[in-house]
Image (cartoon, rainbow, N blue to C red; front, top):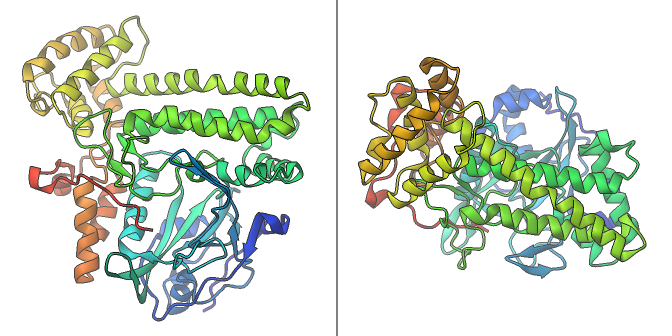
Length: 491
């Protein structure tokens, strides 16, 4: 059987300055450890063929499939606020693009596939742990309904990579609506290549914002579209307690998808200042800072687009500022609407925002688990005697006072108790990729070559809003000795 990828490549048809042509580096002994069969079918690929040794060789980069046009994409970026004029895909190769069953163009990229001209003295490889982390978290985000890159496959290479120690090497096959970033525009802006910026903007509009093709001012509309998608995306992150960890401009996707899962994490106890990333020493990308940083990143994008707005610099800046000004309201509207749903409010009344904020303040003060507090609040909506939400608080009286006001407010809603509970459970997950569970899965794979915990965890996370009583333990927060205080990038 032959592995067939129906490639229809467009990015590699852009000028050579947009990328470097480079093939993946062959590996010694590729072995497929996980194939996302439903995603393969969605992409028009045959999962049975992908699971053959030939398929594993392609997914590891040992063999380049027919029709592929492998490239490493060029981009720049602000990393923790410091601008780097050339970054690019240092350990990833874009094999090509396919049109999925919904007619959406998707990139298929190998991550950890060897050095490229952008590797900056790195080995271009990935260790098994970060590959499993990205597979777990990206697929969990998809199941939670959050725009994200996805994971098609994970392959071990039969080789070791050297980090602090020797670790099993692996390759992740990543799927995205594209891998174009804010940093892609910055790459050309710093070189004052306005023609390339226009060419890139036209490509992005055609690919991600086709409704703007007939717009009178398409580049203004493009910035507005990216602003809206990023505002919505970050609101969704906050509603599930997600912390990206490295919101650099080169990790900010123009399509509005979550991209580049490195030291990412989900909060256990609610803490607006929570940071897990070992490299975020100043808390720049803390949980509550994420909206502000998203706007900062979008401002950098706007700076790149100014030459397309107007030859009059003042007019261009004024228009960009006007478009960026929509971020705050778009984010706030999405975030507040999501929070109302999380506490079972389906109409909007004066005082709702204060009621929600009082709950969050009490959660922070009492170290209440973010995910379980909202999930168990749904139980209390269906049965006022249910006290599992109360049990999340160090001082249960703090919850009691708030719950009295909440019950008074929900009594003004038209839904029945059962309807409210069902609606709340549909937006408040039971299962998230808790850090201690992710680490346990990685350790079993790295130390014992045991992927059974990984398989089970991925299975549970695919249904985050369902009760799954047989797997109830996966919903438990960590014991004190299980807490993961830092996460790592893995590069």
